[in-house]
Length: 116
Length: 114
Image 1 (cartoon, rainbow over the protein chains, first blue to last red):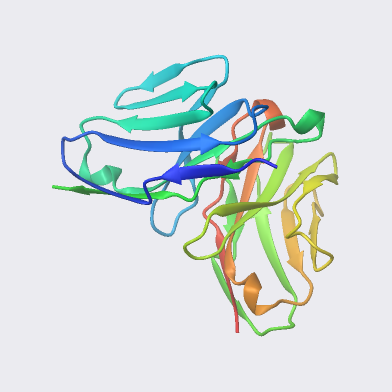
Image 2 (cartoon, each protein chain N blue to C red):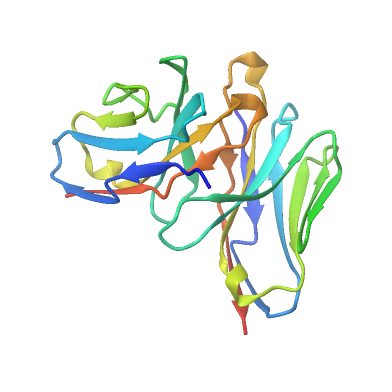
C-alpha cells in the first residue's frame, strides 16, 4: 500500500520568513495530493491540493509543487504569520485499481511554529 | 459554510464497554469515512462507506468495529468492546465525489478508554 513520509517533524520560523514542508510517497499510482492544516483541538482542514497532471499550484501565500518522477511534493508558505502556526499534514490518494473511494494516506505531520 | 459535525467531542469509557461515535456529514455528500489519530501519530484510515455499504476498510477495522447510516443523515462508528489501544481521536469525513472530490473532516471525537 501507499506510504507517505513527511519532513521535518517540527519547523520554527520567524514571522515573515518562508516555510517549506516536504513529502514523499511510494505508490506511483497516487494522483491526488492534499495538504491539511490542523489547529489544536480541531479536525484537519484542507488548505490546498494538487493533482498529478499539474506541477505547481498557488493560492495567495501558499503553494504546492509536485515532482511525479521523484514522487515528492512540497508545501511552501511565504510571508508566514503567527496564525499559520499549526500542524500540517500531507496526504496522497490513488484509485487502487478502482476499488478506492477516496482513502487518503497521511504523512506524520509537521508542527509549524511562527514566532512574532 | 457546510460542515461535518461529530458528537460527542470527548468520551471516557471503561475497557470492554461499547461506544458509539456519531457524525452528521455534509448534506449532499455521498461518501463517508472514519479516520483515527492516536496521540502524536499519523491520521490513519479506518473505513469508507458508500451506497449503504462499506467500500474499503483497513486492517485496523476488525470485527470490533462497525459503521452504520441509520437514518439518512447520521453516520455512526461503533466499537463493541473497547480496548485501551482504541484511545484516540476519531475523525469523520465526507466527500461529494469520492475519488474525484475533496474530503471534509469534522472536529473529531476524543475517545479515552480506561
